[in-house]
Image 1 (spheres, rainbow, N blue to C red):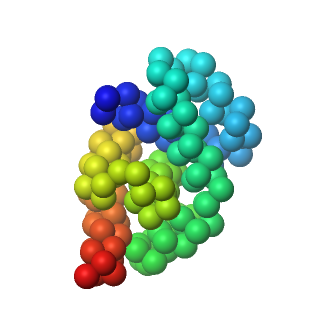
Image 2: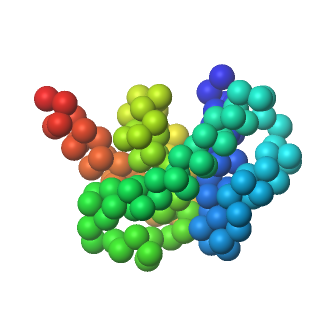
Length: 139
């Protein structure tokens, strides 16, 4: 169910934003958001896996962002955009459960829903660089 997974990503993004912006405890933040969300058990688990994965690998994900968006210091990227990128790069490079195109499309949709007018283009550009690198490494 794509809609449920998109909603799970949305909840995960909201948790990551709050954790990043305010420094709240990841588990408490996620649990609070999951209580308010109407997700199936499977999609709630998916949201938890995403948040835990991004929190666990944050430094590694930020290193990837630095590599693929060298003109943008990670700390200066808008909090929402930074967390959309972390989420998508986690799904693509570490989690490997969704195809690259799906992860990029989902990230762009999140950028449209939560980011500024320039967010979708920025997110798509950075993830396009990630995609190009992965294709080059596989060939």
